[in-house]
Length: 138
Image (cartoon, rainbow, N blue to C red; front, side, top):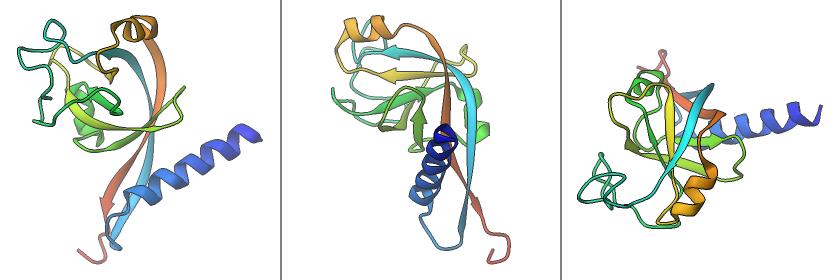
């Protein structure tokens, strides 16, 4: 019962957070992905490790994730807020992963390589809000 309440509560919070306009509707999506971690270091990313593939700036302490490109079709696009199993805070999609990855997210962990290695690679559930246009007003 407690688990059901927590899931329902987070679904409501996520949907409420994604409602940018009155005519938008929110559909909560839950998927299972492989989660790894990365740092803003040149050997892990590119020659400019503080800039994401979307052009956003990375700074340690930010709650950002990179997503595999196949997840874009599921609505997990730039600036989407995401709840990751095992974390209390919401994360924002600010980066995209190399084309070779499928059904993955990469959690940004600043410059703390030890923290990223400790996280390793895990299968987790994520939840996010898919904003859908209201067909009556459009």
